[in-house]
Amino acid sequence: MEKERYVSIAEVKDILKRIQKEREELTYEQKVALRHAEAFARLSVSKTRELIKELLENVDKIEERHAYKIADLLPTHEEDVKLIFAKERVNLDEEDIRKILEIVGRYIK
Image (cartoon, rainbow, N blue to C red; front, side, top):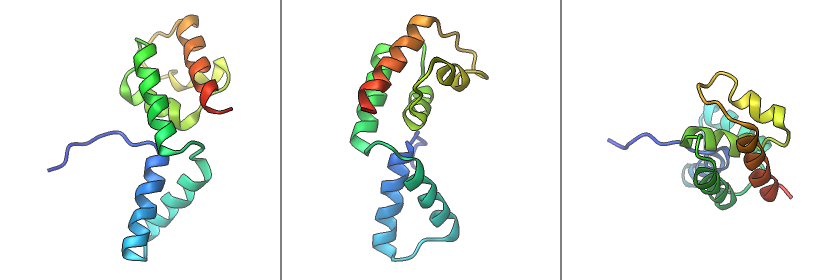
C-alpha cells in the first residue's frame, strides 16, 4: 500500500495529463479536477517543489501541509497569509509572514 503524501495543484495537473495520454479518456471527476488544476496551477512542478523546499527550510513554524497550501495559493499580501493560517494552531509573527511573502515573491515574478 502506497503511503499518503501531499501533492500540489501543479503535480495534480501533471498526473492527470499523464493519465489522459495513457488512457485517452478521463473520468468525469478527473476532467473536473484537470480543468481546476489548469486554471489555478501558476507554477511548474519543479518551481512548486523548489518553493515548498525553500519555505520548509526558512520558516520554522510551518509544516509540510502549510508549505503546500502556500505554494498552491501563492499569497501576495500579509492578510492572505493570515487567512491561510486562520484556523491553524500556528502563531506566525510578522517576521515569519514577511519571510513567506518574500520567498513567494521570488517565484511569481
